[in-house]
Each structure stands twice: as structure tokens, then as C-alpha cells.
Length: 203
Image (cartoon, rainbow, N blue to C red; front, top):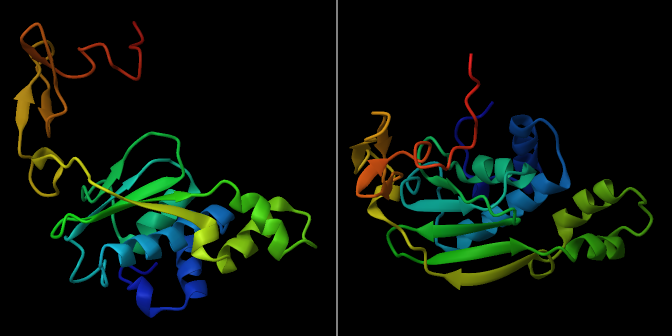
């Protein structure tokens, strides 16, 4: 598996092979994610995302689907490096933010591209295969809607060491990066604050 790549310096088909290797299979979502990534990087002026520019940008992804793996592969961003932010909106979209210029663009995959794919490969009956091939060649304007945006970036969301730590006054656990709640004047973790995603099993 390659650990370094510059997506602008290799053929698109080779880039898709790297996405396939890391994701496990090649699908229309991988093509969407790869093309969306190249467009997003270009819009915010990032030329070497794995090298000289790797600390200059963030990517906000709005869905946990195949395209997100391709975005991570092409751009080099990751949750662990805090350069990828996951916004659980269920929308096939991503926002690219240049930390130096503060320029940001949100790119949304057009749902109508699925129907448009029939124009390019009308003889292919399988929708998944038809979309995979069509998305490789469709003009960007048919695949994506682009809007310039301003990102509400907090200091605690930046990569690097935690800017803030507090201790939950209910359970004593450490909460990093401003993810605590304040209820009745007390610092609480989201679990103690009633926002847990799980229920504890009583023995």
C-alpha cells in the first residue's frame, strides 16, 4: 500500500486503483469521492496534499459512505490527524477549507447524475456499473454543485495538541477539545449529560 502520493501527478485510473486497494472494492462512490477531492483541492489551492500542503487544509465530510474513503485516500486527511471532520448529515457532500486563506468550498454530489449516467452508457443495464463508468467521464458540472462558504472554525477544532481539557464533574473522565456540556453550572461529558449513543448493560 502506498503511503505517499500526489493525486495531481498520477493518472486518474491509477488513483482509482489506490482507492480500490484501500477501500476494498471499486464502486461509483469511489469515483465520486476521488473526483470531488481533486476538485476541492484545486478550488482551495492545495497542490501537494500529502507533502508541503498537508497541514494547510481541512476537509469536512457529511456522510459515512464509500466516497468518504476515497476522499481520505486522495487528500490524505484523517480523523486521527484532525484534518478530517465528520459531520453526520447523511448528505453526499464535503467542504474543503484552506487554513491559510480561509477560503472554503462545499461540494455536493448531484443526485440527478444517476439518471444522467444513462445518457453515457444506455446499453449497460446494471445501474451500479453504468454509474461507475459514467462518473469517470461526466463533466464536473453534471456531477457536482459547488458553493463558496465560510466555515465556523473554532480553535479547539484545529489539528495539534488539545487546546482545552476539562473533567466531567459527574464521572471524572477527561473531555478534550471543548466537547463537554455545561448543565446547571457543571461541566459534564455528553454521556453524563444524557447524549450517550449507548445504554450500559447491568450485570
